[in-house]
Structures are given as structure tokens and as C-alpha cells.
Amino acid sequence: MDERKVQILMDSLLPLLKAAVAFTVPLTLTSFALGLVLAVITALVRLSHWRIGRLVARFYVWIIRGTPLLLQLFIIFFGLPSIGIILDPFIASVIGFSLSVGAYGSEIVRAAIQSISAGQWEAAYSIGMTRSQALRRIILPQAARVSVPPLANAFISLVKDTSLAASITYVEMFRTAQEIVAITFEPLLLYSEAGVLYLMLSTLLSGLQNFLERRLSRYTTR
Amino acid sequence: MIEVQNLHKSFGAQKVLRGIDLRLDKGKVLVIIGPSGSGKTTLLRCFNLLEQPDIGTLRVGEIVLDFKEGFKPKQEQILKLRKQSGMVFQAYHLFPHMTAAGNVMEGLITVQKKNKAEARRVSLELLERVGLGNKADSYPHMLSGGQQQRVGIARAMAVNPEVLLFDEPTSALDPELVGEVLRVMKSLASSGMTMIVVTHEMKFAAEVADRIILMDSGRIIEEGSPQEVFQNPKSPRAAQFLNILTENK
Image (cartoon, rainbow over all chains, first blue to last red; front, side):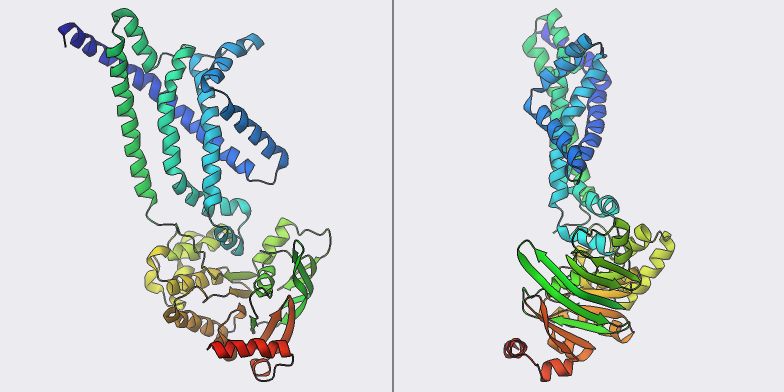
């Protein structure tokens, strides 16, 4: 590799890392945290006896799963201003990604809750618990363990999906790479470099998943 | 005191209970036997409303509920009634993410709002009583079936119920583990606990029951002391069922 390319690699590393730490990671964490809350709420509503709530929850999941994420981001960022809602790129991205995590995550959480045997509910009821006590104390802690691997999947997907925010002017890692390419005309080099950094981020997250699974497997379910 | 009058329950078109009447005084042990599908487990589950009767009167301790068409008990009535009883399940249904002591403490802390130290003290006492004082901090998967079921009994007793309900408590156990669970149940019975037990353990029934009812197709077809039911069954169907049981021994 010639010296110029090595120099470009070295020079771009810091801006890319900065963009990852200052923009990609915060966007991912905020969106995942909010999305997870949304996922649990949506799952609980779908499992409740509240008809209208169930309908709304299903509608929400249907819309989000049935349309492209990129299109959703465009509607939020470029579409909403025409009805007077102007959002900053970070906020628009967080809304878009949270809604997405919420919809896909709700199916994970719902499946995890339903995987806990009816006997656990009955045992909880038999000692006098209400439905919400049983959920909070007995069902959700067990469902959490079941849902770690699929939720980790969603988390890792999200890290990579945040690159879509580049298209609504949020300057995260991918957009930073694009900008450097525009100056240096070295697309192969820069996009590969960004790729390696994404790979490092997701590897870190897989490690976190392993740690969580180990922590939660102090007991085994049947 | 426990009492049901004219209890009916259907699952869809299938009539599972067709008019059950019975009464059990405090401190007595009632054993329910009968072929599978006779409705005995459903009847037991009506006592803590894991199943809701369609028609009939249900009384557990001071709580009386009158079921008829269009009646749905309020959440607080259900909770009140459930606080009168503890249940032991065939498949134990221990909470796998909690230790033995944690399982027993759960009702005390979450339902009765006792503080942790007090709950822990009570749970250790109860575990001691079922012979598991040294297993307090073990998780269910580390215990044998018999030990798990004894934790199940301690958990059911923790909320200090009027009556303990046992749903085939030894049916899932390896034969050599049945004895330890039955021994605990016997000692509870002799300490004056009111108990309703669905079981196929005829020897236990004969020794411990104050009264036995034999169910078939949703009805009580034989009722009395163990002596009366086992020695002189009045109906041919009861005699036939008891015969099959003794042949299988």
C-alpha cells in the first residue's frame, strides 16, 4: 500500500472514532433504551384484555414492520416539516429507530412472556398475587432471560442501522466516512475502515450479550 | 370451614362438574379420588378460583361467593378468597429464579408486605418444618423432585392459609421420593391443618383422610370415612373403580 493511502487511513481514524463515540453510540443507546420501553409496553398491551389497546398495538407493529426504515426516517425528517413539525436530525433519528426497535422488540418480549408456563402464573395467583404483581415479580424476570439473545440481535442490528441516519443529515460514523471520501476519493479504503469499526462495535456488544446471559443463568428454567 | 353447594362448571360444551355439594370443617382432611377426567382437579381449582364455577355457592373461611349466570367476581373478591388458601401443584411450579427461601418469602413480601427479615425468619421456620432447613439458599434446579415439592408445600403454607389444596402432589415424583412428601403431609394433617387432597395414594388416603369423596363424571358418587368408602362402597361404579386400583397395586 502506498504511503498516501496509509496516511489517509491514519488521518481518518480519529474523526471516524470520534463520530462513532460522539454520535453512533449515543444514537444507538438512546434509541435502544426508548425502544425497549416501547417494546415492553406494546407487548403487555397486546397480551392484555384491553381491546382498543390491542388493536392500536397491532396497527403500530403492522405499520413499522411493513414499511422500510429508511422511508420512515424520511417521513419523520423530510415529511413532517410540511405539517409544521421540524425536528433536529438526532431527535428525528431517535424517534425513527425507537419506533422500529419498539415494534420488532415487542414481538420478542411477547414471545418471551408467552414462553413462561401457565403454571408460573397459577403459582403466583395461588399465593394471592395480582396480575401485575405476578408479571413484575415472577413472569418478567424469567422472560427477560429468554429474550436476551433475540434482543441482542436487535441491538446489533440497530448499531448498523444507525448508518441510515446519514441520509437524514445526521453526521454519524458512516456519514463522516462519506465526507472523507468526498475529499480523498478513496471509497474502498474509507468504507472498509468504517466497516472494521462497525465490526468492533458489534463484537463488543456480543461480549456484553455473553456476560448478560451468564449473569442471568444462575438458575435454569424448564 | 369450606363449603360448596350445587357447584357446576363446563368447559365449552363439556360439563366437568355437575352439581357438587360438600362441606369440610376446620382441621379436617378431605381426600378426593376418582378416575381421570372425573373433575377432581377442576373441583380443587375452584376453591382458589384458578377455575371459576359457572353456578353454585363457594365458601372458604369467611368469604362466600354466589356464582350464577352473568356473575363475575370482582378482582378484590378473588384476591380475598385466594388469601384463604394455599396450593401445592403436581408439577411443583416453583419460581426457578428464586432460592427455596425466596420462593417461600415471595408471598410474605409481595402480598402480605412483610419486611424482608421477618419474611426470611418465617421462611426458614417453614423450610425447617418440611425438613429443608439446610436448603434455604438452593435454587429449585439444584433440588430433587421430592425436595422441590416440599418447598412447594412450605410456600403454600407461608401465607398462613385456612386450607391447603393439594393437586396430585406426588404424581410427578419418582417412587422413592413419594414417601418424604407424604410424611410432611401427614405431619401437617396431625398438626390440625385443614387440607383437601386430590391423590391416587390410597394408603395415604386410608391413613390420613377424615373423609373421602369419590368422583365420577363430574359428580360425587361415594362419600364417607375411608372405612366406609373402601370397605363398603354403595355404588357399583365406585366398587369397580376401587377394584381396579387394588388390582394395580
